Length: 72
Image (tube, rainbow, N blue to C red):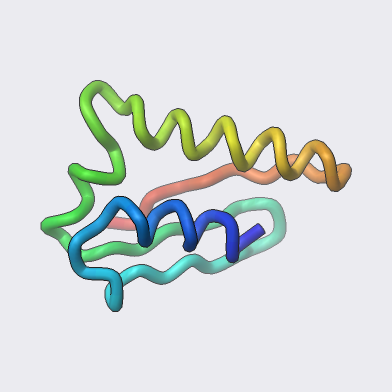
């Protein structure tokens, strides 16, 4: 699941080296550079909602219930 999130987030940001995704149980925490946080959240949170929807669907297929959080 971490590879999926890292792939999606890396495509959205400018500083690709700063992207890190950690998994703690069913919680995936995404860390990006300060300048790229707005690109991950998007207007009114649309982009992060989309990422969360994809992760929720993929984790349900595996029988899990994963969530995505952004670490600032």
